[in-house]
Length: 301
Ligand SMILES: Nc1ncnc2c1ncn2[C@@H]1O[C@H](COP(=O)(O)OP(=O)(O)O)[C@@H](O)[C@H]1O
Ligand SMILES: CC(=O)N[C@@H](CCC(=O)OP(=O)(O)O)C(=O)O
Image 1 (tube, rainbow, N blue to C red):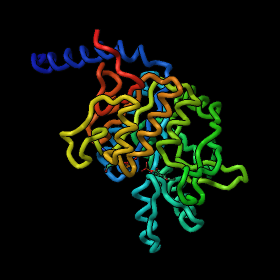
Image 2: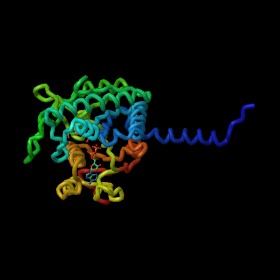
Image 3: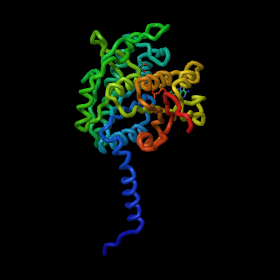
Image 4: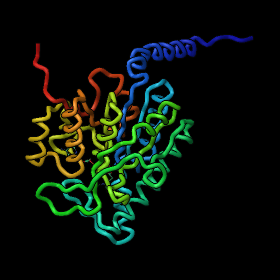
């Protein structure tokens, strides 16, 4: 005879309660675009990546419109080392000579882009790679940092083909975009992935831009997770860059946040992608997680 187990019914009710609780924030973000920047620091961690992509598939399934922009700095460094090429960075940007550019293209627009897209599909989602080599959606110009040496084939995005990206979102596919753009002469330029994500978020009028990295936000001591700063204003962030507290790969990330805020987005978050379900936590908790950067702090009433 069939007998219901009390405990399993209770569990099922708890799960149903969770779904109902989620309804508010699903409604809030349904039909809205969230740009997720996936740092190369995370892409090596298969478990973390799997959980992030599951969150992305969930978001897409409930009608949010996630768009992935990814880097791959660590994988590029490995591929360069295999060829005996020493990486050189200026203010967090890779100096990109022709040999380096070839490797960046193979790793970013080729291997990494394909791997993320295939992983989404393998887990039951639908994704489309919008790589420089397949469907180019980012165009730009060569970047020259003020007072710094020539960076080579490094660019910044000036034009985003939002119609291609949106048409994928509207047909329930997750666009996956590597951080390279086409220069004015039709040749590829290497773009820092944080700045590429910023450009995409602005062009799409995204509701949110989330930087997923391997750290739980901006820290006073970059090696000490207990020194994470929960909230920073633009001015405070600039001071931390000037004083050297924010360095290396965190510089372009924070600069991208500042520029996004300057264009009218209310808040940008830097979140630890290794924390399980960090994406969903970021979206449905009021205070968010990681470091939030705001233009100005609201006065306490
Ligand atoms: N003040 C800081 N707080 C946190 N991380 C920092 C800070 N300054 C430098 N970093 C470094 O920035 C790294 C994140 O940037 P990056 O390596 O480019 O990551 P991603 O691949 O996610 O873009 C961290 O792993 C950390 O080593
Ligand atoms: C110009 C420039 O620096 N391009 C970056 C692109 C990849 C990237 O930004 O990857 P992360 O997100 O892992 O840092 C590079 O070559 O490393």
